[in-house]
Length: 383
Figure 1 (cartoon, rainbow, N blue to C red):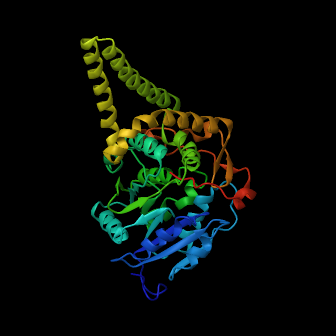
Figure 2: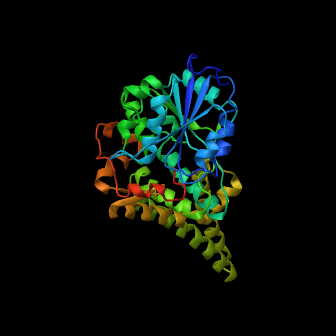
């Protein structure tokens, strides 16, 4: 529960929520956060230039501190600036950075702190349960999260002897001393994939991190329409996967092979070639079973996974569009356009197993092309 006098009580955790035009989701997020039990905490909402009711909603919650992120410094992304602003006034021994579109269980903070202590981790991150609405979300999100589970294996990320490092910014809990020691968000100020970047510098400093699927702790609805889904993943996919073009080709070929083999089964059966149809049916079943075996890593229901085959072409398209955006030198995020060159992002574009070796490389920070655009409404972009 919240202490009666935060100025004199020692807080266990400071919850920092960066929020930019989040009126659709912020209320549910803060309602869940203010009902936490078993820990001494504070909640800080950083209003990052919102033009909707975000600030009004945040101020309606008793005990929630609301601050403005202020002008965006040169070389910073808006989210990094907002989180750094919140960290400056935070009083907790731990900092939880969480997105405005998350909803937490009543023991979310207590569970995180307890697990971090048990795992002797100075950074703990949960990948939330994903709420999916609409056909295309249910089709493509399992495909994307299955690839993420393959590239950033939680068992490797949580192994102190492995160089793999990753985190999910929707729930990133970090010990305050460790945060300050590695430079906080100032050390990743220009990164669009700041959660993974922060995890890498924490782990490369010799500190432990722990990462797992956190359905029992937190859930999120990342996108509310198809446009948001496309814009959000175009921003992130090139940074998340080491070989975007190759991955797009593989997944498109997988879709064609499964679909073509199923079509041939029908053709052979109609033609009366039973043996050939049975052989092709066996091949189709094997291919589809291998596909489902990979997709099940994404922690979605079997009914949702069944639709994922139709998400393969969209995933391939988003991969290509993401790479094209970076090659063209600009990417949009939350109403701001950032100038970037693909070569400057190379330290981000590798598998988790090579992250440790490349941590020493520092890419040039992104520069804001249109800071004035911060006043425009833009679909929610996240990862």
